[in-house]
Length: 376
Image 1 (cartoon, rainbow, N blue to C red):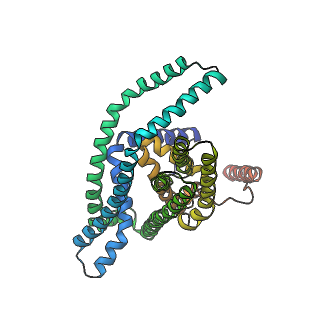
Image 2: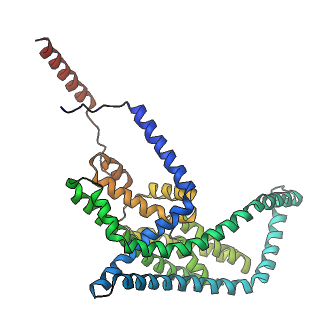
Image 3: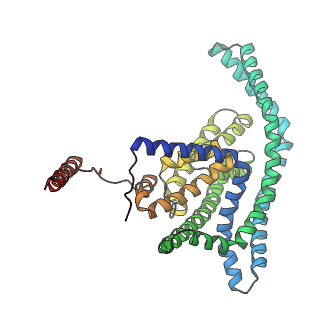
């Protein structure tokens, strides 16, 4: 005898879902130092998996193939970090001159605020001192962040190696944990998830190269100092969808204000970066990044902000790939398909309304028929 499925009221189900989301958020925030390296390692392992498979097909042992792929990845990342570090060292050599010029502009700003905005210099200095005193508590956090960063770079290569080595074990577990009749659907979801992450990461790297080239070219044409460093930093900040592009404008504008006279160059920088962002959002992203990961702009911004609140910079970077994974899963589950469509970027041309009145009438008619049948 089949037991009837118990239906719970909406307020009960919504409360349980909300409680589960709150509990999940607290767990993610509490375990961020443990889960963040694992999440990065998972994405990097998926990205390096095709290279490992190709080397294995050529007869290279599995362990050797993983070590070679991991070494290549480390060399690429180390090269990027070395380039940025050398540029920062060169920037630090001229830091006293920048500091002197900045103090002059800051003094002019103080006098302008005092004369035009009626904010006395004493009050401005008090506001600055209050801000500096409140920031002293960040020193301990900064030391902890530095130590956790060192641990991050040590753990990530180890996690990547282990994930690639135990790949078949993990995939077999995912197949066995679900019912046998769902095996094909599980394989489909895993395949699309892997393809989506690989496509997203490769597209993101290509987009960063193009954006870096455009940033450097624009800053060189405008005569901005340290154009290469600022252009590369702007491209790296572009990894954060919609938000990073806006933050990337601030650095070259500040450098130009300090090193150049007048506001012509800062205005031209804003115009050039706005044009680059237009090209990026309307041509590069649809062509290189959004071929597999189609998340609408609203949820992209929201999930990036939520990721930053939970895991900081790493959470902002990881938010879009994991939201794409959720969308792939939602699109494969009948009861979750509306949520998958909500996350996507396909806007329907009309509103689908359920015919509530007709449905209620049919339910009443069925109830009356059942009552008459019971009386008979």
